[in-house]
Image: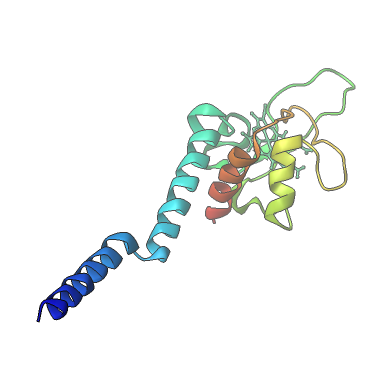
Length: 133
Ligand code: HEC
């Protein structure tokens, strides 16, 4: 009788423990992590980085309105950043924001700044800009 009681108590403890430690399903945690990554990317491109000063509100791109020194290589247009369609994959986009180097080893034309975001910050920016259609 006593051993049965102990067994049942242990079983109840095990079930409670499993319920407490499992928490929410992994998918919900993943989507929370993704949402906070995107929120950080929005902050870094917005209030912090002010990419829209050149890339236009909502990052739609357009003509480059920043005047450059005469004769110097200078961009005529500013690309749309929505979806980051100029990069074939996320790794190239993260590398560009981390090292300022494009996949061909060159830097973008000025006045695009030569950013050196940390890899996690570059990843957040890429996640956010990719989330825009
Ligand atoms: C001072 C103006 C300016 C600011 C601020 C700016 N950009 Fe740019 N960006 C440019 C210009 C101009 C180009 C086009 C360069 C070229 O044609 O080579 C460009 C190009 C790019 C490209 C495409 C690179 C390529 O050649 O494929 C990306 C990605 C980019 N910018 C991201 C950003 C992000 C992210 C921010 C903010 C953190 C930002 N830019 C802020 C001016 C700016």
